Image 1 (tube, rainbow, N blue to C red):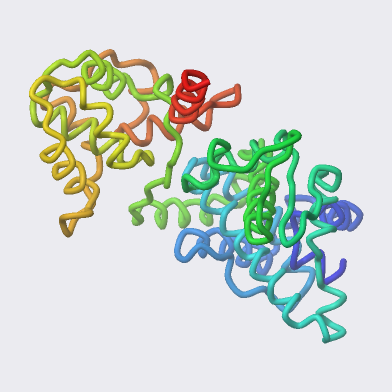
Image 2: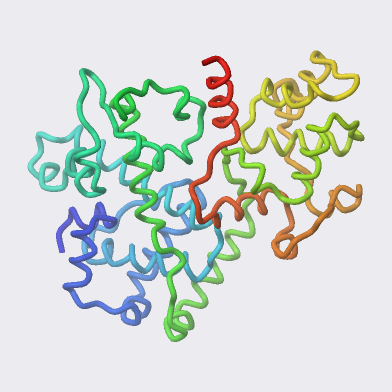
Amino acid sequence: MERRHARYPFLDDARRAVGNAEFDLQSLAADERVRERASERVERALDDGTVGEPSRDTRIELLSYPLARVLVSLVDEHVLTRKYARAEAATAHDRLADAENRHELKSARTERLTSEELLAEFDLATDVHTDGDGYRVAVGAYLPLAADMRGEEWRLVNRALSDGAVSISATDLDELLRKAIERRVAEGLPLSVPDGIADALESTVEEIRERLAELDLTREIDTVVPDRFPPCMKALLDSVQKGEHLPHHSRFAITSFLASIGMSTDEIIDLYMVNPGFGEEMTRYQTDHIRGETSPTEYSPPSCATMQSYGDCVNMDDRCETISHPMAYYEQALDDADEELTDWRDDEGENEADADA
């Protein structure tokens, strides 16, 4: 086992190193030091978005990674899987930058992982090419990595595209590689864990569940796919698009939901323009107020219980029976999608472009 493997445990070489060492999960679960470091990785992911300080023992640090993935699998909550994968990716990104800054040190050179090596690791070497001060990425490689990125600048319609390649900066490439690491970490989760190992880790898993229950974790979503909306929001959106008058509680529910999934004030206003008695100034004020732009509070969408009390809970399906909030429904619906999802706003932009042509 090498220190580099412990610093970047998502690498194929690191996985092979663990396999060659012939450790089994049962022995890892029984190893108190490995179990404690694995638990720390997961809990720190929840607390501060990192995986904590690395163990000085290369063996413990490397072996804690597969065991942490087992813990995440046993808890089996979307929000934990997402935050854990992001924390591992963020930590790897920081270590890469640190090694780059210390490149003159012999120890850093042996631990260093270059962008070129990362591109090869994720089979992107032939899809990414330098272009002056930036890079050009094949559109087929760009789209999957940029799909979950937050921010309008990542949308293909806002990028320079020519000859099947997207122009990006060096900083953009760093962010895309971080996303590739995040996806590698999350790949295959949740794992199928034998009952014996689950029993051995029961107390540790329960501690993580308790920590998770203490936190108010809301996914940062910037993807608008109406077909994946919960039935209540789908019905309210349909009413808005038909120009029907909505009572205040219904208007608040759909507006706060749309804002929470990444729609801008202008995009929401455009939806309301077909409503009777539409007033742009008032609609903008109300939307900005809900978004926290003109108020001290950024309002979240109502819970399922509140939606039910106001009569806005309609057309319940099987997933509705398992969740307590429309955002949780939408999050699961996005995660469970088998096909590549197209953001509604991208469709709108393409339709406008076709019309202009």
